Image (cartoon, rainbow, N blue to C red; front, side, top):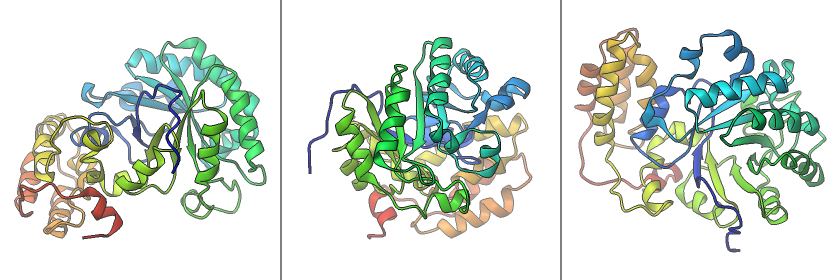
Amino acid sequence: MSQRINTVVCPHLLSVAPMMDRTDRHFRYLMRQITRRTLLYTEMITTQAIIHGDRPKLLDFEAAEHPISLQLGGDNPKELAECAKVGEDWGYDEINLNVGCPSPRVQQGNFGACLMTQPELVADCVAAMQGAVNIPVTVKHRIGVDEQDSYADLCRFIEIVSATGCDRFSVHARKAWLQGLSPKENRTVPPLRYADVYRLKQDFPHLWIEINGGITTLEQIQTHLTQVDAVMVGRAAYDNPYLFATVDRDIYGEAVQPKSRHEIVEEMLPYIERATKAGVKLHSISRHMLSLFLGQPGTKAWKRFITEEGRGTTVGREIIEQALALVPQTNAIADPVSMVSGRK
């Protein structure tokens, strides 16, 4: 195993990928009770939504959610620059351009993964955003699309976009098929090509390269960090948020004691009480907490009670407290790796 190339000062080592209908402000607040250091992302927000929509609803977040990146979807440099500036003024720590989503709706707007075939346009968009803000502008993309998926194609994309001064790239180690596969299939069917991402770091040592795709355990994260600058975790972070319970200690080297699942829930209670009193439906928050006790005794009772009692209500804290009482409490911090990998 080769040593990690450390020519770029990494702003973070680990992030949770932007995921539609998942990484909203409530999920991000939950994750902040688990890890302080991991970079969090918004869901992808289109430029048209920000320009014409309800900005507070789209962009508001809690101060506790820092560090946080606003991911934008769009292909118009002027509009992206305008929205990047809005994001900076709103308090976001960085702006990220989506060049990886393969959904038909996104393709119709000529953004997301289809922009992989237009690196010059991506460069124009990035340059415009950089000119509008003082915070970092980064790019999340695939290793290729359709037949344009060779390593040479990937290098050309990186060369053109990085010429703007952009030095941070989050690379999903799968190509995307723009026709014939659903967005869900595009997350699983194209084979993972981690070696291509490792090679990018070798060939572009001055760039900050983050790897994404199919990463589900702490052991895998640690292995990837010997090859690249950072690791982005997607669905596994949502399906088992407790995977991140020890990362501040084990990845960042902080002298902190990981919290138990019960402690995490208890720290969510004031937020839940405040939000539900303001009119937020409990389900909007509690749906993100369903998998917190994955693999633990009482998890079925926890999920069932929250699902049956929490839908449609704005009474929040009491329901979560009652659900928590159904889960046996332990003082031990369970190994988050074993729960994902299946070992006991």
